[in-house]
Image 1 (spheres, helix red, strand yellow):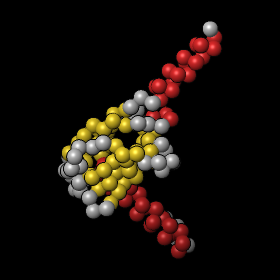
Image 2 (tube, rainbow, N blue to C red):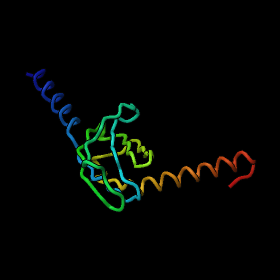
Image 3 (cartoon, rainbow, N blue to C red):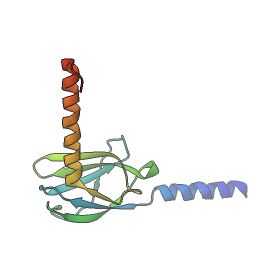
Image 4 (cartoon, rainbow, N blue to C red):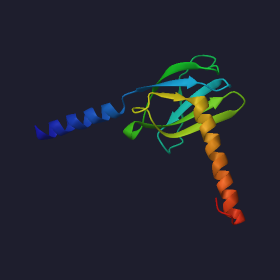
Length: 129
């Protein structure tokens, strides 16, 4: 009896972790989103996520996506924009955050990269911020 209960609990927890989650992807950037992929965090085993045919136009188009998540509701996301540009979001918590603004994430990522480059340049020159 005890072993049956343990097996049922394990089967239930495995099914719960495999439950698809939903994410509303908003394209608030200027370029069309042509593809979306997800992967278990750190795996680089990218799997296509179905989006509307023709992609999401910039300027506010949105779509609710069905997402498979890894442990703890985390997923790496790769969003392909027109013009061979892509945004990679690592460790996105699909259970906690139900939407992602792709254009905003793109701008924040670039701002962070510029800030890191400025800090690295100042460190190399011997001056301090």
